[in-house]
Amino acid sequence: MNFQNSQDYYGSVLTGSADLKTDACCTLEAPPPRVVAALDNVHEEVKARYYGCGLVSPQGIEGCHILDLGSGSGQDAYLLAQMVGESGSVTGVDATPAQLAVARDHEEWHRERFGYAKSNVRFIEGDIEKLGELDLAPGSFDVIVSNCVINLVADKAAVFAAAHDLLKEGGELYFSDVYSERRVPRELLDDPVLHGECLSGALYWGDFVALAKAAGFLDPRLVTSRPLGIEDKAIAAKLDGIAFHSATYRLFKLPGLESQCEDYGQAVRYRGTMPGEERMFELDGHHAIEAGRMVPICGNSWKMLADTRFAGHFDFFGDFSTHYGVFPDCGVAVPFGAGGGESSASAPAACC
Image 1 (tube, rainbow, N blue to C red):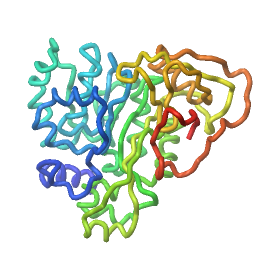
Image 2 (image 1 turned 180 degrees about the horizontal axis):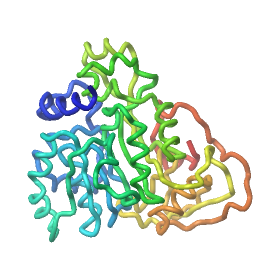
Image 3 (image 1 turned 90 degrees about the horizontal axis):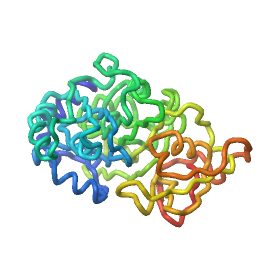
């Protein structure tokens, strides 16, 4: 039911973002300047059929090869195509022919708009639950993104496992989706509106963490989150008080990450060389690293910076020779809520 309902809801029921009944499939965050500038170069028809719930524009992706799971009408793909440049590429996968048609119809328009000699974007029709059936080579992508789509599929474990397989070592899955504060009753999955509005398929955050770790993403990091407004009275009545959040996570494919944030006396200093983040680099909602400042971090965060595309932007101090126990302020509290996902230059760089 999930697969067919997704095709129907996003291909026929919705004709544009104004048809949505909740703000679950809407992006309310204020985009950074680099995203605002890139949006000016995206075709209006593509933007009109956009149903994302977050900003999936990770830092430092120039020259990267990116896979967009559930690429829809192509807005995120065309944004990222500008950020990776002509030496990079973006591959979009979507199962809804009507959405793919919009994305493909404007491929040449975007190539000319970007001033590229050839397009660095391609779109593939396919089910993201069955990525192994597509012509995608294991270990071939630097970054995988997804925007409010994984909640729509039934076999979420298959998506996370395939994403891990398709990433290079040191790569990351950077995605936005909808999460629930508790498990949604299974009978609500059969409601076509609740499913299409990205609510009934939402993961309880604890189940998400377990699935991510089982797939090999050993330390999921929350980047941002916001509570969702359920203003439609009929939908709110069906949900019976369940609260939902839109959240963006980053999951790194890194061997050796530990289950806790362990303290090895390490620190980093950000060089301020990331385009668009010259003053502050935000690894996640608890790590806003100011340029030029020596910042203590845990062993996992060290690896996320030292063993990924971010390494050249930092100076590293210390090693793994001495263990000092669990890093201060490391905990397993509910990630969403007051202050969840927010960053502050004055806050200590503590692991969540």
